[in-house]
Image: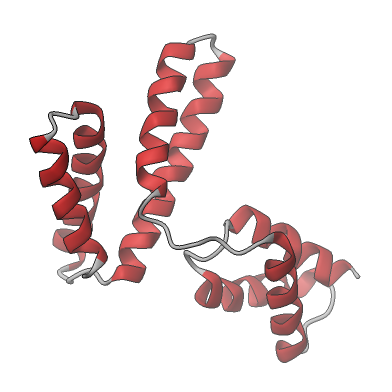
Length: 148
């Protein structure tokens, strides 16, 4: 079953269970997917859907930080529950050690050295690790690999 089908089935399940919070989050995800399909005139594959989920999770993290900074814990909690629902659609994440090993391999493969090659390395890393690892963690690993 594709990720798109899984999301549709989860929406139906949430509707039957009258789980309005989960349903609202899934509908947000479906709207973002539909928007991308319409804008780019494409049919999304699992990798593109994972990228959308990653983007939505990053938005939630930013919102949580802003709400907690403003003392609005009620809104931060809502964003956290949405983030939990979205994380169910991500594949298993790589550990920090696995990310560091993958980055070192890519740096060696490209023959990159020094901070000037960061863009080149990040481009290659993004294609290989998209959806499998947190990009903030990946960026830190690339900086460390190029500095050492």
